[in-house]
Amino acid sequence: MTDDLTPVKRVPGYLPGTDMPRFIRDMMEFVGMSEADVAAIRRSAPNVLGHERELTTALYDHFIKFPRSAQFFLKPDGEVDQVRLERRKHSLGRWLRETAEAAITQEFSYYLLLMVGAMSLTQTALAGIFAQELGADEAAAASVAWNKLLLVQLSVFMLAYVPPRPVL
Image (cartoon, rainbow, N blue to C red):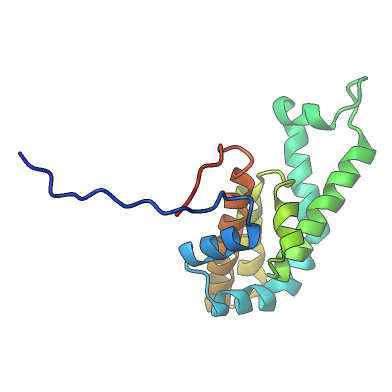
């Protein structure tokens, strides 16, 4: 039996994480993120940012409910470290504000490496906001666009957990 597959010729590539703007551009292309998606994100940004405190509080309240995640926000005496919690909420709020601009700069791309992977909870909350505050078509467009952008960001986040290897 013969194999009709020819081997792929490898050419020197780059290590994801060493050229973050390229990696993010590649991921945006991979998820099919268009200028229309960027525009939908920017149009819906005021709706999202109007709920910034609500979103960040809900996320960290959720973390505190579960011992495995709550441990990261407790003082040695077992009480919630409110100062640490407020810093984390502020950081999440910053991420949300910068994400709402859909401006993927080199500085922001490296900032993503520091974020906690709370994308699913954020996507769910955003879908609820869009459903309440936007018409059905605009809510659907905003949800799809934000999901694409969050997927790009999640792929950046994953770089911290996957050993780097050259990419063509």
